[in-house]
Length: 326
Ligand code: AVI
Image 1 (cartoon, rainbow, N blue to C red):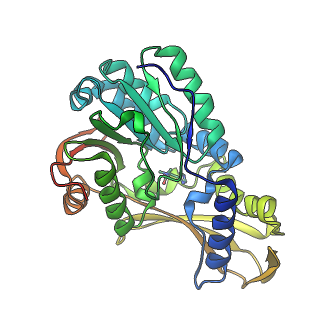
Image 2: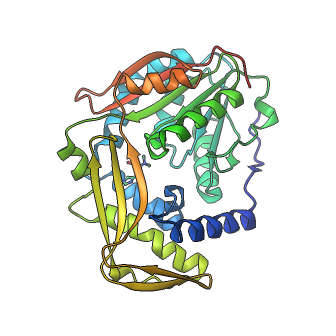
Image 3: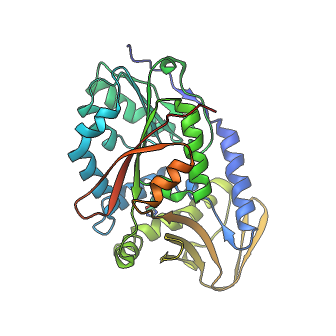
């Protein structure tokens, strides 16, 4: 297969801007106030997230890379010859490179990401290193249904969703993502998915309250982004980062806490905050080796294999869709 250079752009830039504005105004005028975590990832946010993945306290990336490194040959058994690998939220290509190295039978790689620049940069590097692989990027918000490129229509599909990004969805959103994924990938498809595990709350608290303050910067960048892109006037010094583990809900919650009574404007709208009031910016759900397969089963997937790192911190699951496509 030759390597097409065209990129399918499912995201219209002005539509994306107005969705951002709509979601921000709706979230900041709701009670309690909230902002969707998908908006963390502008260029500065993506850079800060890369820095988080290298922090000593942030174990998920290291643990998942260790699993992929050690188990790639076993994972590769889920990739039929000539298949197309579709990565949801591809970002940097570090993880997929491990799978591509172990599975030369993959014919096409479809990275799906909201960031067009990141897609282009990573696609160029992959084409250079895998000349026989068709790299067909799709610029799209993968949290919503999108179309796969026609070039991979006839191939077997394998989804790849690493990083426990599924943990940033509410459980009902996670189930609906899994249902959309099965409809898109089709009958017989596999999905390789990284899922963070329930563990000692002290380890979780440390991972989201790092000593260097990078996670705090990442959280606060959401307000900087609103200031930059939506003409907001948030005073960052008037907010602080708060992250804690809720044992009952098995999730880390991240908030931005207003240090005092204050007002801010966003696109002409007045936002009022009480002292101590929070803006809820992210949930990061943690699953067990029983609860994630149960969620996947309810969404129509058959769990086939699971791998964990030596410390039992993180899991990578192989699911297969045997049912009917919607
Ligand atoms: C991308 N996602 C899985 C990260 C997480 O751990 O929930 C985002 C993150 N938030 C704070 N630190 C990292």
